[in-house]
Amino acid sequence: MSQRKRRPARPEQPPQPAPKKEDVRKAPQRRSGNSALRFILASLFVLAVVWVFSGMTRLLADPKDSAIRFAAAEATGTPTPVPTPSPVPTITPTPRAYAPFGAQYGYGGEDLIEETGEVLFTPQPTEAPTPEPQPTAEGYATLRKGAQGEDVRRMQQALISLGYLNDTADGSFGANTLSAVTFFQAVNSLTADGIAGQKTLTLLYSGSALPASAAPAMDFLILVNRQHTLDTNYMPSGLVSIESVLSADIVKVKYKGTRANKTAVEALGRMLQDAEAEGVSGWQISSAFRTGADQQKLVDNSVAAYLRNHSDWSRKQALSATYNTVAPAGASEHQTGLAFDVTVPGVSFAGTPQQKWLHKHCHEYGFVVRFTAEKQKITGFIAEAWHIRYVGTEAAAIMTQNNWCLEEYAEHMGLLKSQ
Image (tube, rainbow, N blue to C red):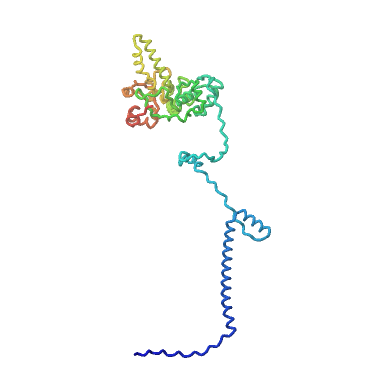
């Protein structure tokens, strides 16, 4: 049998001395010190939580309470932070309040906003303009050339305000007033007869009449002939009495109150002054502007004369003979206010020094001899040595240089104009 090994015997420990009484007391004191430290730390943590919670409570307190505490602090002298005032709520207009403005300036619109029925705002009262009293149509006296008085003055004032009359309101229905009334009627689609009746005066005082500025601009190259006619009521702008522009020492006007386009009249004056300076005088204007109604009267008078002198003629034959020398209503250049019949009193114009000077120099002032024997098949009218037409200096120079009549000029220049 194997023998177990025996462990060596532990050496005997010397006996330990008994603890002293002082050491026994110190151990319990160390444990109590640790407990006191933990208690202090816990208390500090609790105080910190309470302080934070108290601060949050003050921040969330009602402004009224803050105000009360602030007043109390003021009374006791305790410094207290100034409370921050609560912001005043901003009133945001509803989208529909912007709708009228948006619609006016091109974005949004009332049709894009749902109607809610709420009151958007109370508009500030604005003073409405006081409308001018308008006279009633009842009792208007028909006014025509030669009339005098307050009714004429009142009509003239209205024509002046609309730009038709460039004169004073003197209460006298003269040539300038006649021109203004006729011009007003033409622009406003009334019968342009120069007689101020009920329709003319009612529209004139209505506040809705078209002003003179609404009239189309004068076209100095307007083509008028049998194929290119004007409306019977056509009325050009810028007409003036020739006598009001040109002196009687320069030219005699056969019929008082004869009117024409102002630009053309001024050019005519320069031309006749230069002619007189060269020793050629004795000029007369036999005709200028004529209305469509005036032209029709000329036709009717010519037909009546032919029927008197030719009892076997029919009206058709008399009318055919008339149209050889008299243009139908609407086909006369005189209706444009740009044509003049220049003559010498008591003398046949053809062959006179005045006729020769005129044909040689008129293009220098913007005029052309409108109807010649050479161009009769194109113009449709027989030669009229006395009939000149204002087209402007540039066009007159081109037409003279190329020996064109107005029809040829309009065709070559691509400017066929008709009213």
